[in-house]
Image (cartoon, rainbow, N blue to C red; front, side, top):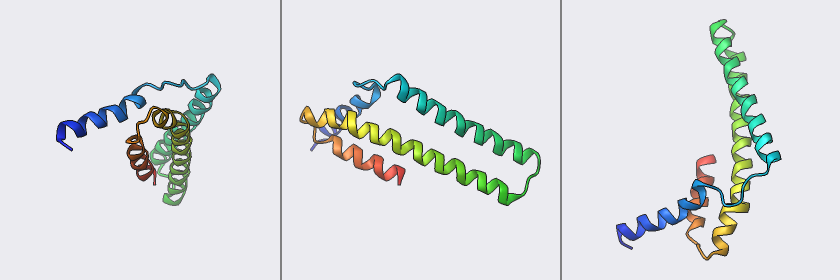
Length: 109
């Protein structure tokens, strides 16, 4: 495959993800926004802990909590992506979307 052909395939794969064809429900958006707000609050809390010269172990515990929350958030978005964007592209005959999905799995590890 030529470099141009490869870029065209990447454009086809990514185009479906730039704007979702199947919009998230209001409930889904609200739940994701709530999770995101909690994580932002946790990160701000870590900043305050630093300002207060808090014990390293306490800060590390909060860092682990944020990492876990972010990982969970990512899996929710990935699940939705697989059920909507990826499924829609496969139905259209775009088998290349699976390469993107595999790369996304690797990024979330």
